[in-house]
Image (cartoon, rainbow, N blue to C red; front, side, top):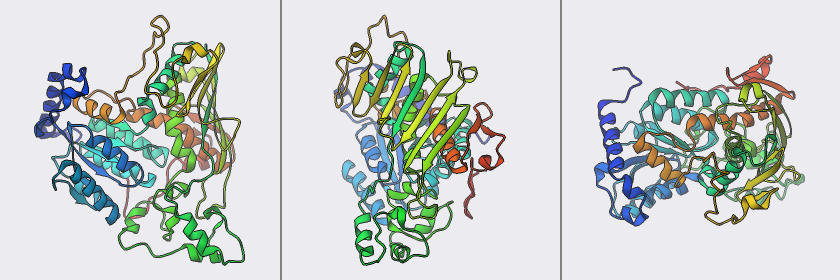
Length: 482
């Protein structure tokens, strides 16, 4: 049997789940009370979860709420986090069936696991996702798709070759307000789009609130330090910031394929985002949200920009936190490539008050803007009845809504439905890949200090060998991307 084909047992189980879904099709349209009776074990999707940091707990709890999903395994490199995960899962089910793993490879080797949820630091995305896909596991994976474009290409290839279902954690697509804004654009109400503004956060954010304790230790130093972005090697502040890893964290494995570096608490748990060795800063952390929505409104899910020019402000490259604090990226989408009636310029900015958070499409006949805080448009009638925090508002009138976009019942629910039906999710792997490319190219442009020419078909940077080298990154032994 060819190695990229599912095993007979996997096919049998998926066919069984698909058949069960078809039989329950009418019930899926009824009130959710119709699902109150928990399905038999043979009808449930069994899942393993990897990562119990920021998104792992909330993703897992959403899956626990779905009666036709059974979380049977959890994996984390931090003993305390792992124990919390297992306890949370077992408490929900009232049993002790969830098994704990420190090595993801042992977990995905289980033939009785249908799907995995991956919520780990960026440096691990590609290794975990490709390994899970090669084990024929359907995958719910967090954004950004991966740390580099070449890693993203590897994930896309693995998912496609193994015919597995992929859902990206770009959950804004499952919110009616974002879909409504995109339908305004896709149905031509604002005319032909000329420009798009994508507002993202700037600076850094201390998610776990570990910085105050470090600042207290540094208070006696003659040089006043206000942020980890000011701490560099060879200084007393650095010496105080570096400590031994806690005994309950396998720090060497946590670093994985990334460059070896000393343990500093303020750039590990959740704050790994602010160190380019493990994350991509606010830009890569958010491009899979508002950049993804911008693409959805333009129908650019399978294409990309031809030119990218970016400017940014950075802390010292060797600082504890070294990711861009202010940035602006201008992307030109050529009509010859996209098939759109005209060229479109998209500006992605963080730390620029003139471009607020969210996605704004500006066309020949008006504009529309959407963010988690709300929705607005040049014509108030288009967004009448919609408000932030409101689950749903009125759809466009039928005579205007010629294009009706994918309507997801909820991001985790949509994934489970797709696992059963084998139909694509609302954010499949190809969409995640293309939504993130402008962010990756913008970062490369900032770092090399010049405009980039990008070939969206060949997916490579043209005429710039130095920039091309940044499409990938070296892997620390013994890790390698298959």
